[in-house]
Length: 167
Image (cartoon, rainbow, N blue to C red):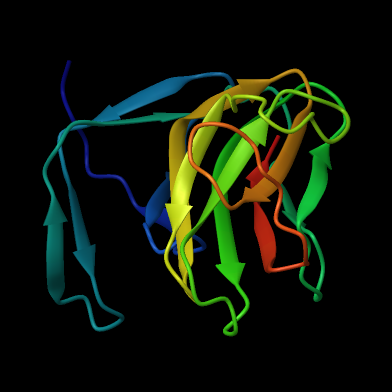
């Protein structure tokens, strides 16, 4: 297979980890050996040399979501099946200890002690993000901010804002 020069449509930095959207015919997959990042003047600024797979067969429209402009302790992110691509949580500046963002395949808040299907640490008064380049499929998606790792202990006050992208 011969590789051809391709123009990037958009570089998005929603989660702090840039991802690249390239043009590809609907329902197809394209492969890139590397991507050269350039500034507005056309000067090379960086090189992503790992093999990159770009697909447009994602089965739906990318939807940006957020829990709103106020802090939450838990939230239903999506009440039906879908695929998560980006996730970010920002803790309130007054939170002085690390917390854990946990995801559950559930339509409502899980019982205390339930193990999540996925989790990440959030630094004190900080933020954390994750990209799922191939997608994180779920039947429904519920998020909780927990004070413990491994099993759910929902925080007792609203401590963070959760947002991201899903199909």
